[in-house]
Image 1 (spheres, rainbow, N blue to C red):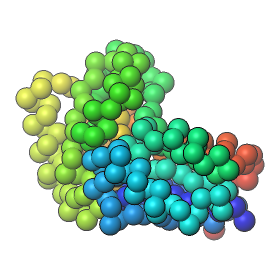
Image 2 (image 1 turned 120 degrees about the vertical axis):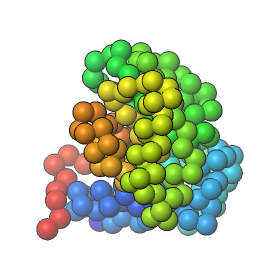
Image 3 (image 1 turned 90 degrees about the horizontal axis):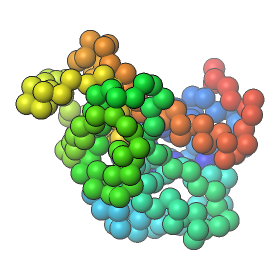
Image 4 (image 1 turned 180 degrees about the horizontal axis):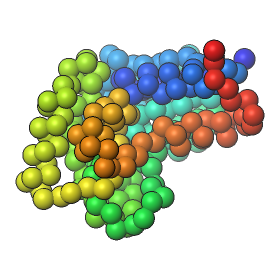
Length: 220
């Protein structure tokens, strides 16, 4: 049985671990959700890296794959982990590149720490879309605690659209926790929107890293 570690500082990692458990019957999923240091994984790339190294130390070199399911840590430190721990396989969540038509108004829901990285700047430049970056720093913790209401979500999006006069055709979720609220976002836009998350790409990267072909199944 393959051993896979899923690392995150919050509920987003739990969501992806659930996806793996549902679809991979050839793996033992080990959830390393560092709740105590949740703020570090959202606000500081240096603190996130230090926290991750500490919490991962029992698993380094002892599991088949470590998945970094946190955007800030992945886009700033994945290469660092791969270089430093050469005997351990890593994959990380990355910012999705939509394959749909260009020149579509696109809202990117993320956090301030992610949006301020050079990696994010380069990502937006490659999108070739009219984009609006929306840092929602208080939402991840509210989602973790089950406190983000539909009313707050809809009021925030409505104010955004009205004040910015920005009418999107696409929404990109650049915070793992936001996958949990994708259905509410879709209902707000009355299904007239395309939502992109990175879980599909991360799942495919996981299968490639483990050379799983035909080993994917639904658990009964």
